[in-house]
Image (cartoon, rainbow, N blue to C red; front, side, top):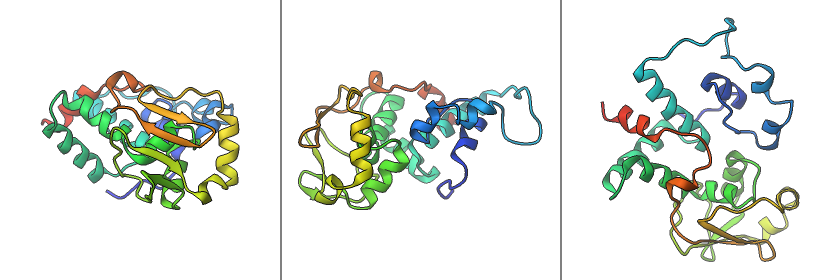
Length: 208
């Protein structure tokens, strides 16, 4: 399946929960989910009760949409998570959090993961002094993340930094707002995930 290019708000309405895919707009009264909190289509009103498989599928799709990745990418992450020691579901979430585009978002350098993906793709990010333009790049403990010269001069990034000056940085990351440099203190843990997700449903989906 190719990457989704349709309306982001439609995804939230389909999932029945806010996915916060459009940054600040999701917190305003312009949010489509607030105005139309029902599934897209001609039939308004109640939602159909989902089967066990439907719940598992919805949970998998919800997490996939949050991180903005393709079906094949998600399957690859899951396969890798199963080969890692520990709990598969928690391993999966940790891998997704370690994506470079997500790290840029978590450091407060973008309003959304979609925007963070553009920042990385346009060559505005360095990892350990080397320019990296691959959003799916997985960071490791001890890696240093910083903006390139072009990134530091980017007007949009400067604006976002001013708006998010008081936003706390997750515990597994460190960010110096003066040097615009971040560091991976450790791999993210389950308690670092700040959105509701039942990862066991995803494990059950792929275990069939």
